[in-house]
Length: 539
Ligand SMILES: Cc1cc2nc3c(=O)[nH]c(=O)nc-3n(C[C@H](O)[C@H](O)[C@H](O)COP(=O)(O)OP(=O)(O)OC[C@H]3O[C@@H](n4cnc5c(N)ncnc54)[C@H](O)[C@@H]3O)c2cc1C
Image 1 (tube, rainbow, N blue to C red):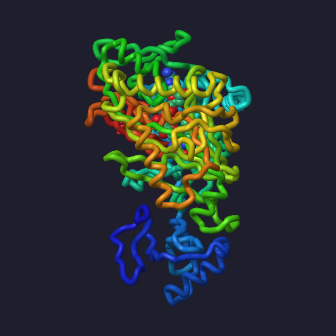
Image 2: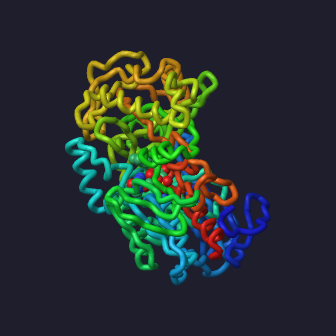
Image 3: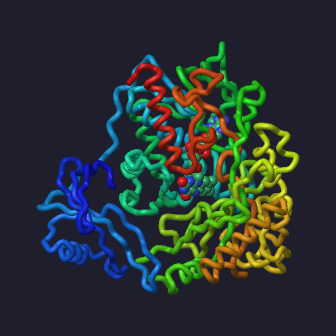
């Protein structure tokens, strides 16, 4: 049910209800890709379906049904009697910032940015401290990483303004059932320059060429409304007195004080986890998923999914989503990037991590996806002795080994043809790849403990049973996909959202273990901000 629709009545597939005070009716139509951009045709189709002439209509959801030989668009449509149109929803204006409260936000990723904007909306001043560069300088550092394979420890695919999602596919799905909150995040992105279609697409996406401008615009709003942001300001320690956090200390020795501190530092801020270790503060081990990144020629995925190549010009590059239970454990495709590129997401020069991104048009010749499995304590051998850091230690070991397999040269990655990975043999040659730092043949299958490899391999075989042609020597496997989520969890009290041992410290977003992905991290940021306002008596 779309946002704001109340008590719909349903008859003959037609929905009726109130949306923002306007009586609307909702129907679903199926459209051939030839006509998807033809507004007159769509209007006729809607009119035919309801046996009346429709003046105004709005597409509220768009998806593709590719099950038949000829894929079709499926549109959910709101139509109204008369020439009325729904009001655009824009995020509420900021209140004047109060001088008596301020909140420090560690990290300018989706969780940090959306927490800061929500604080401003509630009249509280946020001060963001970000270890990395502002996004335009970060662009240049990333270009060097791709060209020369040199990882800057403070500015890379995970660190810097906008956080880990800045150079991503910009997929905006969330499994959250709170559609209202999801819509609020999407509205904020649209108000800052994202394509309004993200509000209606079943699988909305933005693209790495558009995201930096949106992030700059978010920063502009933050500054205009009275917030502050400091770049190249890595938080190294916390000022804690009598069990209460009073501020933070940066690596350069700067000190910042505030009423509360939001920890929105993402899943790769290992020094922050060390702070908890040094101070004997509770942390929990958190199972995470790891595996490989798989890349096919996009034309092959189009052929498999759309039953036709070249694909229809009005269809986007095809994507896929797989999950198989192998020996009682789910193995699944993760963060699939149609028309995308594999990128090095390492945060230190002696490790190798891969991930995927794409541009708005998704127009590369490749389709990539993580194929991952949840790692449990029983999988990680002696690393389980590391207590709360068990999964983190295992993650580090995988990344270090992947670096060695890649030849320990820049960010060159170990590669294996998909069929050779399944057969457990080193490839004598490798197909073309989108991964710019380069790949070299290596025994990627030996990277994982045998039981994990067995599951990954059998999952690929089972995916091929579902979609014939998926298992192919034209596809290549790169390693290692290991930063899917955070391998530790920072506890927080369910009612106050504070850390149970440090008052006024608010773990938040993916790095604290409360979100996964851009939208859910942004929503967690908003939730924490509202709770802080409540705890400070500012609501
Ligand atoms: C290549 C790639 C592609 C992705 N694609 C998608 C996608 O398509 N869709 C999707 O939903 N998700 C995607 N993700 C995941 C998504 O980016 C994350 O889930 C999301 O960004 C988490 O948000 P966050 O704010 O919690 O943390 P982050 O985005 O990780 O932000 C944390 C910020 O904190 C900063 N920081 C860390 N330590 C410190 C410190 N000590 N002091 C100061 N600042 C610090 C970091 O520099 C960073 O900017 C992708 C991730 C990557 C790496």
